Image (cartoon, rainbow, N blue to C red):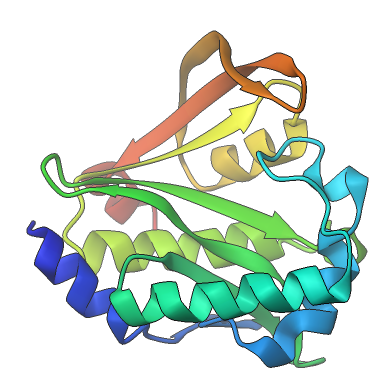
Length: 192
């Protein structure tokens, strides 16, 4: 796969639909919904970023994302719950390796909406898109040790646990061990 192909696809970010969700580009109008969960320390405990400090910070972030979308180098969707029309999180590719036809997915769900299978539903749609539209061979996901909820999502997606990278990253003042799970297109296609 060529980088230009990825840029072209994501500069016109498609909308993905599932039974209960719509995945679409993030917009400034999502600021309040995003800030509602992004300000929470319990949400960012296992993430690389810290809680948003204000609604202004969230709006600035969303403006920045608009520029990244126009360049085609940002691969994250807003997760919209269809019934409430609220943005309840994000899901997308944190990295796409064009030389090796692989990608890494990530997801964040507002805890007020957790336990309903939304992360799995959104991630499955992103993975289907990656395998069918981007022709990826492998998709992986990473989690900080202790984030059992994220590991359960990966398991539900048919990903296999590949192991831990001990003290792989230094974040928020301490070294964190990171686990990796992955699935190949052939196995994912057979399971869906």
